Amino acid sequence: MKEKKQKRIFMKPGRTNSEDRKNFVKYWAHYVRTHSDEEWSKQQNILINSQMQNAGRFVKNLTP
Amino acid sequence: MKYIPEKREIDLRKKITNALDKFALDFLGIIKKHTEYVVISGYVSILLGRSRATEDIDVFIKKITKEQFLKLYQELLKEEFWCINEDNGNELFEYLGENMAIRFCRKNSPIPNFEIKFPKDSLDEKSFKDSINVLLSDGEIKISSLERHIAFKEIYLGSEKDIEDSEHIRELFKESLDYEKINKLKELVRIRKEHERKKAEKNFYETW
Image (cartoon, rainbow over all chains, first blue to last red; front, side):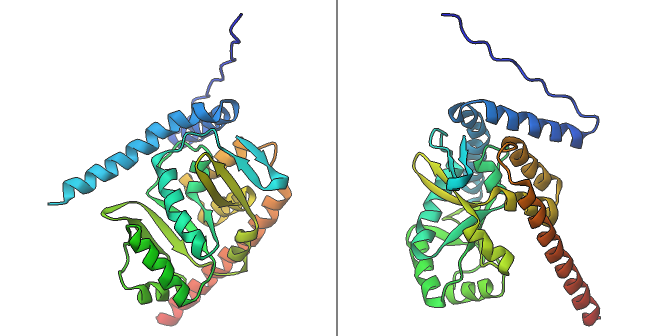
């Protein structure tokens, strides 16, 4: 069976840092809308879980 | 992600829960035994997929008596949550009564933390009814309506991060948002912000 090819969406680079960030927010929201919850959450969790781990490590290092 | 506006429900049961969601479910599981709550601000966007982390989760709790609050506080302590502001329950209740937010975290881990507050006016009060249930694989979280979230982010808060949080929701739910409701709420929020600005200005000059 032929594998269904998904059309790639490209992000327009911004002229300023703020515009670029805004474009990425839209790009990512579109990604979330067009991909399964399992798929986008796997990627989001890399960011969130690592912040939680780092916060835990930071506190451990502070504790004598 | 399936949003059914008529049912005021977002189905996220296929989302892989992260450490922040687990923290939220643990804390809110205790809160809801004692009073009604509604999650507002940044975590609403994050729960719905925004690609950023946060140090705190903001939540309104319905006004309760001091006795009810002390019971809630005892259970939070029993479940190893700490308050960052103070350890005396009576004083914590006073802070809430003065419209100040108090923060709870896991024992020895200030990040992330929960910022809880009482609603300060009817606009805040209405967020309890104007809310949505988000279904996760291991529980439910009640958040403010998407339209209310957008109005507050864009008008009341307004930093670059807030505008981006709002943009995420606008893009994600562009086919199901009630744009008339957003505009009405934005007007109400604008009036409140102006009222607060005038009050702060008056207080400033009176102090001088």
